[in-house]
Every structure is written in C-alpha cells, then in structure tokens.
Length: 125
Image (cartoon, rainbow, N blue to C red; front, side):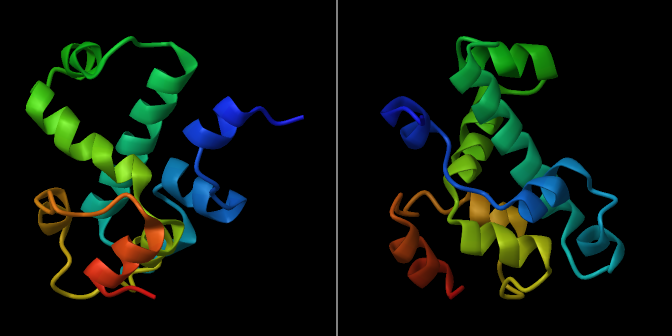
C-alpha cells in the first residue's frame, strides 16, 4: 500500500519518461530535438530530490558540496524536480517552446507549484 508520505514526495512519472531522464542516450536524446542541457537539468533535479527524499543526503548544501557546485545553483535547479509531467515530457521530446531554454526555465522564479498553472505559464498543454 502506498503511504501518503510517498504520494506527496514522489510526483507520478511514466516509466518511459523516467528512462529518458536516467539515460540521456535514449531515443529522445538521439533524435537531436531534445535539449541536452534540459535533459541533464531535469535528471539532476530529480536525482537530487530522490537523494533528499530517501535520506541519502540531508540538505541541498550537502548536495552542492558533493557535486562541487554552488548551493544557489542547486537550489535553482532542484525546483525542476516539481515540473509538471507534461512539461518534462515536452522537454524530453523536444516539443517545448523555442524560447524555453534551460536557463529561462531556471530563472522562472514565479513558476507555480500547481501543474495546470505551470503548463499555462509556460505554454505547454
């Protein structure tokens, strides 16, 4: 039985999408349409979230130290772990709007947590 804790910590993600995020040599990546930086950012954010949720690390600061990158960057990137599945799939398939670069997405501090509102804000349906 799934606990409420796991439902809240692990947003649903299709197995195909999970494989694409784990394996950047997937068909979506090889097609040349997916943004390699976007795929890497999504995979890192998801991995870091999993590390936090599982207790393998205790903080974003610990992740930053381990990865030898700034804590601020880890904080910015980690927000992508909560991107709507539709947005993640669009990035994996190279269907995101042309103006939606990884840097643009990271700079969207106004991005809501609710998935329908995220899709509307970014223009992916």
